Image 1 (cartoon, each protein chain N blue to C red):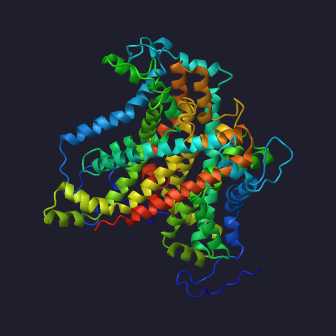
Image 2: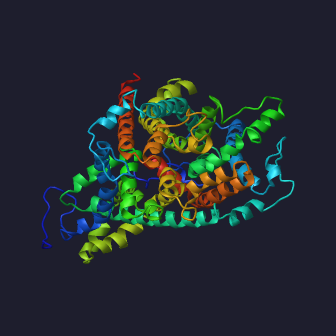
Image 3: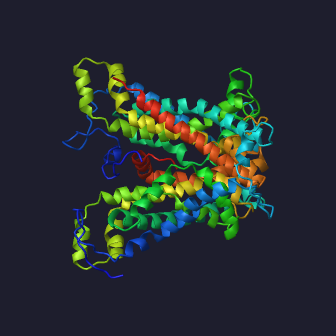
Length: 307
Length: 309
């Protein structure tokens, strides 16, 4: 769609995790940054900017340990006067807003969606990048065309499909339709095309069939791309909002994203409880992000596709 | 079908056809089933729906031809106000948010493109909010901008300024939604710009420096032209993302005050997924999609035209 560079070439800082000075050996880096002299001002600016991004999250976390009156105190009280787990206990016992159930639902839905998306996309991408068959161009053209269609035009017809399948208010409504998205196929195909064919050729001579080549050669060689797609697909499912708001109704079937909206409606200004819900939804993805942030950012930087 | 081994003429890539003719179809089958069921089929069926009075709750779905579309453009129909109010609000938000969502990330990316210790860490921090969902960010901002006990008004109060009703008056409600969106999504565009900057050849800067170009001249004549395509991509995707506005007002303002932050997608879902008049909602979705397509194409043509000599 936009950039066609594969994510193999570490064009950003992948080769340089600490962002530290490097001697810029031949061919290691395209840019010498000779122009940029970095003074303390850069650090001051970056620190202030980072605080803007981090403080709201700390505020959220801190609030969950406060009493309701601490969270409502004017003048603002930064630290809790007494640390309490009341907020976490409240949502544990609330049958109308079972936040911990939503957490499990979100995990199940996101993992299922991720697995389905990656498996199906990898299989299709392999055929599209390595095999020639009638209808290949039609399929690829259709797939690219859907990338340009806004998601909301599918809401009405897919809602109807869900009701026909009996999938309203169930996991399947969140796991399956999203896996039709063309991004994964497009993304993995780009990556597969960049893999040299010699390995496959020699496996062929040894009598390997297509499935063996796919599972034993292509997939292991594509680990970075597969991880990137898996993470993006997990995050997309975990954070999906509009669709779940309309296809889920029962409190015990909800995932976190639509659930949080109802929690906020139920507890309006009992902010420790509201923030506890937000924290339960934020912490898993933040942990995941800390572990795989490089994949996420590289994936985004090189694919340049929202969503 | 026989697994013939045939030479493929003129490919120069793979001299052997080493798979059974059915194999590729088996590989693409699962995806094709999903694609047809949830994207291609619905895209066609949605048009069919929009040509009927497709009420989910009623057994009959009478054919009405283009009536649903006519209603959208007929000021005496009940659909007219909610639809165009949503379109207007969505357009307003695009105008308000996109300049910030393009310019601030560009500045951030220039900062992150400098060589200093820990810049990978800073890049990750800037991107962090984007991995959170709209629901989490909405709740955080709902608390920060709470008119009575929120941190923002608490700070204003602390320095002796009057409190602001961030969510229940205009233009404050739009400001809150825009600020939330900037905080939430800015890292995405910054990362895209940064990737673009790192793709610019260093020799260009060296040449410019030899010609005596200062920092500003380098930015003006090397960086900006070099980022042309990235810029086009960022502006286009940001317009589309802002036009999809739903979650922020759904959580923060419930579409209020009045219906001043009710967006096009909200109008559509109210009609089709709350009122279950899905035919007219489908018609809305196509009109909105067409408007976005026109904007995208126009934007593409305008930005391609702006030749910097």
